[in-house]
Amino acid sequence: MNKAEIASVLYEVGTILDLLDDNPFKVRAHQNAARAIETLSEDLHQLAQTGKLTSIKGVGKQIAEKIEILINTNALPELDELKSKVPDGVFEMLRISGLGVKKVKALWRKLGVISIGELEYACNENRLMELDGFGVKSQERILKGIKTLRKFAGKRLLPDALAVADSILDHLKKEKSITRLDIVGSVRRRNEVVKHIDIVSASARPEKVISHFVKAPGAAEVISRGETKSTIRLESGAQVNIRVVSQDQFPYALHYFTGSTEHNKAMSRRAKTMGLEMNEYGLFKNGESVVCEDETEIFEALGLQFIPAERRENIGEIDEAQNKSAKALIETDDITGVIHCHTDYSDGLETIETMVSACIARGYKYLGVSDHSRSAGYAGGLTIDDLKRQSDHIDKVNEKTPGFHIFKGVESDILIDGKLDYPDEVFEKLDFVIASVHSGFNLDETKMTERIINAVKNRYTTMLGHPTGRLLLARDAYSVNMSCVIEACAGAGVIIELNANPHRLDIDWRHIGEALKAGVKISVNADAHRIPGLDHIKYGVMIARKGGCAKEDVFNTQNVDEISEYFKKEND
Image (cartoon, rainbow, N blue to C red; front, side, top):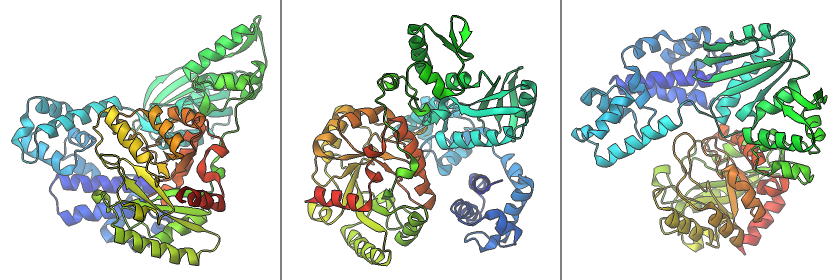
């Protein structure tokens, strides 16, 4: 087990203990230990081997013993015993947005609800009104949460899907008969939400590949097994599909099964206009195969530039490739610094110094600190005095770190009327301001659009944060006319954030092309609340590529002097 899996087990133990009304100190001990392991920079297995697990803050002797059991056996008997005391459906209820342990415990213990289906019925029958802390609005929110949960059932975020795919690829690489191998489908196209993982391999011995595939680590069920294709379900619930083709067929299968369906249809239509037939098995002219060694040669055979997998959504990429006008897409290494970062001044876990050190270790040249503003009481928002204190702190750290620069900013809440959260004299002392909606999500489209545009027009707004407010697999975007917002940003010279947090990836890639055409810059922002969050940048770059961003389209590919000059110019 890796440290993320071990932390997950400890969280689960803590949750069940809480549901069972066990000792609160015991509950917190497991939760604190899980958090400590999640953020641990050292090698957990090495600490276990050297008997130093208790050196981790929050890990006592008993929990250290449990960690050792998990490392050595990949299981924890205590967890199985605890699970037997709680109905499976009770755990499912915890997945509903807005339902924490306290409320689920009340529903189970006091109302006898033990499944999502029973909970839905109870809401529709107004049974929750009998419980303290629940009312009509609570029932409505729960019903909405159930609907959202069902809508996203079986789906997973891109980083989770990539991790599963990489694990399966590592397993398959051990089968020596495989000559070529790659991820395809929505994972290869870097869709922000993925339903299943698809893999294509080339081998002269497909039966050996299939036999090896179904023995993948964590395989819980073989859903189907044929001569050249198979589907398994992992213990995590992920569905993985594989297809085995010949060496000659591999380039065509790679292209075809990468998709998207609409891209494939458009490519097929183009092939027909050239007297060709194209499918997953090859490219043919008058029944004779047109030999292509790789995808690049397939595109060349159709008179096209190579189209990166991320762009294959039939959104104009074929026309660009035909006109040879497609730009080289941004790469992760093009990012020079991190904008949008939270510290322990608000809801971040790290000090400014720690975040700076982590950025330097990753090769970045600057950091934009932007803690929450004063209206964000839920996130320890900064008062005016707090901002001044932080500003002085940043000055001192800047003096100590030559070759690296910290920019002073704030993530200001956009209030209901579209105003920002401080008076102008506060903003004018900052390098940059990110304006974001964090509340009042239920406005209608007209009011929400007006609200955001009002904030965009504020002369101190540098960039618009996570513009649709979505939380992938948890909360839909609020109603907003993005075309109008993009137009306003273009007019005001406001940058639009691509929030790289995997739960957001917002601005939606579907709006990026429109923003670029309007002349709006995109900033790929980490929105990091702790050190691992800095590494979310790579997911933001994936989505920036999908939206068609070149290096020059992205704000934080510039050097520190260019960034500094931009901020000064905007504040003049």
